[in-house]
Length: 151
Image (cartoon, rainbow, N blue to C red; front, side):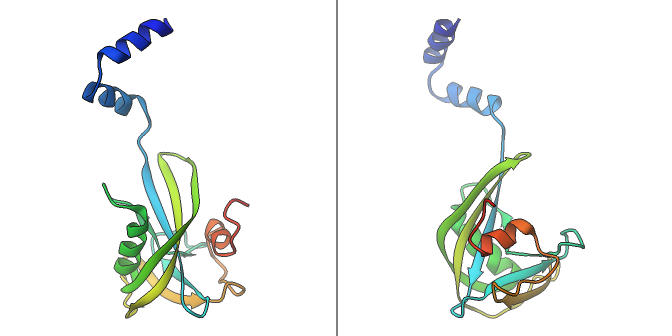
């Protein structure tokens, strides 16, 4: 049976192989989070309107659009949600295990811009010291900030 499958696979080469693979595998959205810090080491947190009321605080987050490089998703999302400009840094986490979603997180450095929140999605934006994070914060985001993303 394995030889037959291998022979068929070699016969259908090219675009048809890709189509078979596309239909046979799960499709994922990619959520991208930015751990944005300023020169003082503070982290940017947003109070999200659409998140659970008991856990509204978290890092800037959004979904990558087709063909977008994930570090640039951080730049776009921070700009859209806060008006601030950032420079993406190193990859800090890649997490799966969600239904149809993969989560990616990058460090980012605040480089400029004027704070102007998107009041459709965001209720408030503040800089916090890592040792005094607010109550009502996403646990996964707290771990990212403290450098222990998989705890």
